Length: 352
Length: 222
Image (tube, rainbow over all chains, first blue to last red; front, side):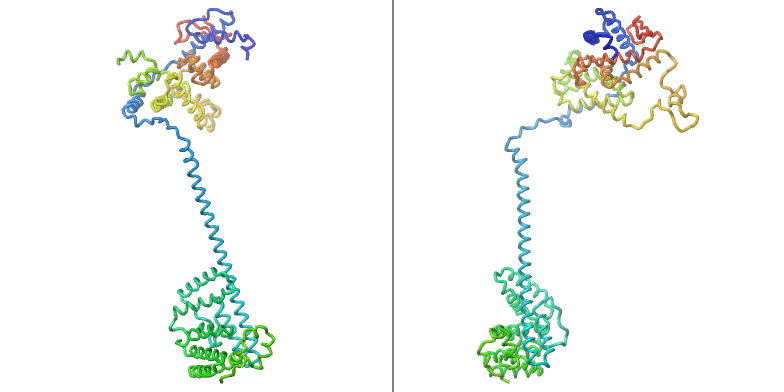
């Protein structure tokens, strides 16, 4: 600035120091140049005072302010006082900053672990259920193929019903399978739609399957569960072809003990054809066991109930005897036939 | 306690008494300082109505903040710090206000194109008496003060309008006393240069009676 060139640093300091009381007394000492500059400053200050006369505060302007001051004194609670906060202890800080977030974190972690565990359990159940379904379906398909292979050469004229029956067996085993057309066969129709209660029982049984360590038995357990559910809640007005189908499957597995139980359940069915099939199944089981007398009686009872049952008995009798030359050849080729058919059954005679 | 005792007590003692519940002490403080604060605000915002509102705001803040006041601090410094903050906020707000200056050239009407609003106003509506020399000089000085840099202008106003010492100004604006003095000298230098073209002799109305001559070389004490 210009004054830097005009004045030295000490002179500038002198100028600034003289500003404090400049208006009270004229500059007395110092260099003439400094005194002249201070005089000019003094004139400017005087002029500025004249240019900016002091304005009085309007009357009554501060009445509200004074009233507020009085109010604040009379009711100190209204005035927001600054309370000195108590010094917080270390443990209080730890609790405030550590405990709550820690609890929240632990809770979140527990919830996540619980959800992950539940997810795993659900996946396991789904996998086991899927395996069980696959096993059951495979078993039923194998059985149906076995029936077809046995019945086709033995009774060419009855191949169509036999094939239809094998399809019905598979349909009975697989709940998702479409029911067969009505009238296609009366031997093993698709099971009727189960009631909601029965469905729930089946789901419970599926859960038991999931808990079962042996997956190979899953299909049987599922089947038994279905039978158990049906036993508990028999539908008096619906023909229980599904019981007949289960009995047939057990009989085809040479498990006549189970088959007899199933057939026995169907002896009181509302449908005479079902009852006839139950008697026929029992007779076939008796024939397989070598009890020709009982088998004959059962066949007779079946015929009395349903005259058309003869065709079925004729069709199934070679299987029960296991000695038919027509099917001996294909069975000989199959290892399963040797294993499945007991030796005592091979000599059983046809009661009819 | 009598009024005479109240009057002799320092600002800090009065403030202490107000904090203890003596509303009269606050009234004395208001009587002592409201005029200086009001004029400082008036010269800062250039609007009397707004200055009145701001004065109320300053004093209300004093009331509400009385418990935060520390006796070690000078009351004058404290209250002018509040006033300065409010004035700074107000000037910031004013900068963002969308208002047309009276000196700005007008737009729109062809007959008024290029004229300022001040020139377009009828003579009797102009809030200044431009005809007289003294007021003209006063106007020039006011304008020159307004054109000072903010830090110099606030020091100049606190010194000239509020009557604070350089130490108190330093405490209020948060600067060393020497810095405040330097700012004051810079302000005086700038005003001297801005008014150096005035050749007319002038005797200030509010001065101490001494004749002040304004020559080509600047303002000369006569």
